[in-house]
Image 1: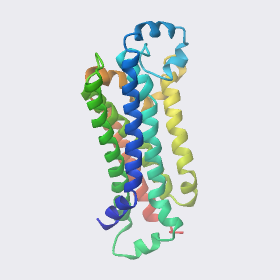
Image 2: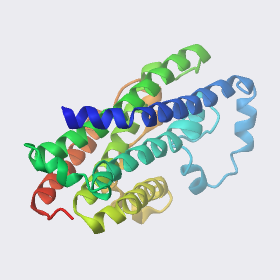
Image 3: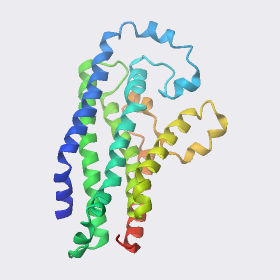
Image 4: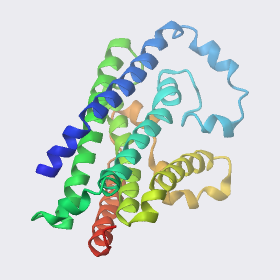
Length: 266
């Protein structure tokens, strides 16, 4: 608990800034919609000539400016998942790296605490920060959905799609954490590799409808199982997909523990 609480205290203001930043972005997107809600059908017609490949990079619906299409294209299909992913990857890469760079990891391990417990405490702290930021923004989005009014969009769907974004981000945060636990090489490459894979997952999964040879390869990418428009309409969480991403995150954490217990501390 000492390691866990110390980590939370050290990052509390960072969590506050991320919460305010993402919350303000979501509030701005929601607040803009009423200004062109009445003319959205006409504006949508002017966007019909956009190529399918380009359209699929911004939304998983056929229209940009319907209530569901607007929230998907402007907020939940790309930008919110990427923001959460950047937060998770940054946390995952720094939870151990900062201790090693400051030469304080040896002091922690000199105490009566095992390497497994140290790693689990760090992972729990990072996950808690991500959950705090995500839950606050999920509740904010659900409240704003009711206040602004999006016909065909359920407030619970806004909440669930944010939770799915968290699940997606947690996977890449766990990957970054695992790479950092491997030592010097992994520590230096954790942010780059995790960010590259997150972006590749988004791009390839978005293009599978127009590039047909991607239909099978993208099945191993997490973004393939992220469908914000369906959740916004139905107000339900994609349970199997969410559980699958969470299971991969757990496997990565177990791998990090196995590697960290056997490596030399530099």
